[in-house]
Amino acid sequence: MNIAITTRGYKAPERLKSYITEKMNRLERFAEMIMSSEVIISYEKLDQVVEFKVKLRHRTIVIKEKSEDIFKSVDLAIDNVERQVARAKGKLKDRNNVKIVESLEQ
Image (cartoon, rainbow, N blue to C red; front, side, top):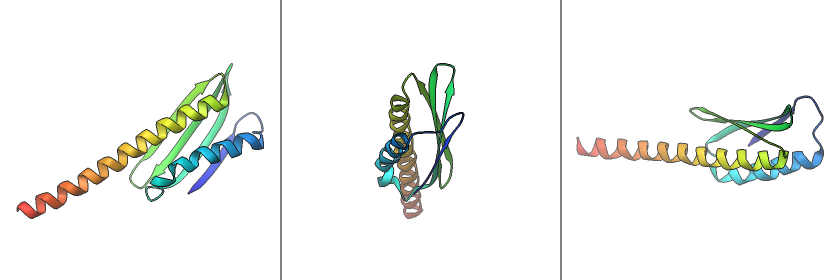
């Protein structure tokens, strides 16, 4: 899985990059669905913002989280990405099962 980390307005410390990479490894079980992912880190006034763009086979998921701590933002965003990718996988699985059942009934 390709992970591109981009920062806007500052240089991200190596600790933050390794933390994001470690958290993205939680998505390895969905590796067959995920084509690529991009992480954009920036500031908005006093909040630290993390934006995840995860490209799946059939669609793109964009998650934006902000909080006073960048690590908290990463955790919130990863949880949200994981939930949405799991839901997309479930929908794809359900859709495939329906097609098989419909073709057998006809």
